[in-house]
Amino acid sequence: MKLYELQNRLENASSEYFRVGLDLFHESRRYTESSFQASLGNISIAIELLLKTCIAKKCPKNLFIGLPLELELKLTYPEQFSELNPIEIRSLNNFDFKSEQFNKCISIFLFLFPEVKQSLKPYFNVISDVRNSAVHSIVPHFQRVDLDRSAHLLLDIVELLKAQKIISAFRFKLNEKDEKFRNNYDQERLERL
Image 1 (cartoon, rainbow, N blue to C red):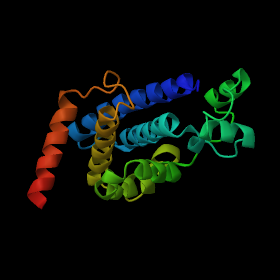
Image 2 (image 1 turned 90 degrees about the vertical axis):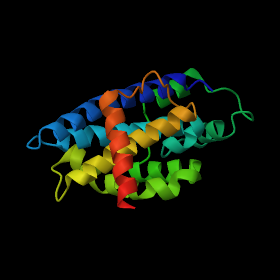
Image 3 (image 1 turned 90 degrees about the horizontal axis):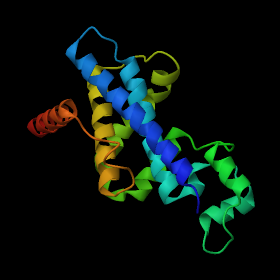
Image 4 (image 1 turned 180 degrees about the vertical axis):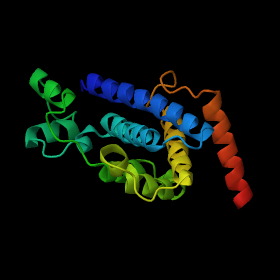
């Protein structure tokens, strides 16, 4: 199946939002008066694109809504049907079909990785509630601890997908600030228990 361009473009875009979102996140932690909406918006988009990258690589049919039956069957059972033709590939790569909503992508991701459902579901609930506001309007009633949870979720998803070789470790390198945050967050969580 020739969906490498689609998969590569999704992964590349998610890596860009990943880095920008985390850089803004670290900046917002350094200056308490700085706004966190841009960070939250970029982190939310990075998470959504990471989920879509994963779906595009593991079960591409489930990334899109309303595919023609022939294309849906070709994506579901590639060994049973002829290769995708250039027009079909171009249509998928250009997102000519609507892609799944964020919450459905979360459900698919958790179905693909049931071993993390219990630990990540509370974090997904937070980001699911604020994602649209962060990207399309103003975030109401949001606390900085929720921004920390969102950044932690992003880092957990990245580590899982790198370990599964779904995304490139090169594109999603953690820097010193990322590592420090992750270690401190994990330590604080252990102390709360």
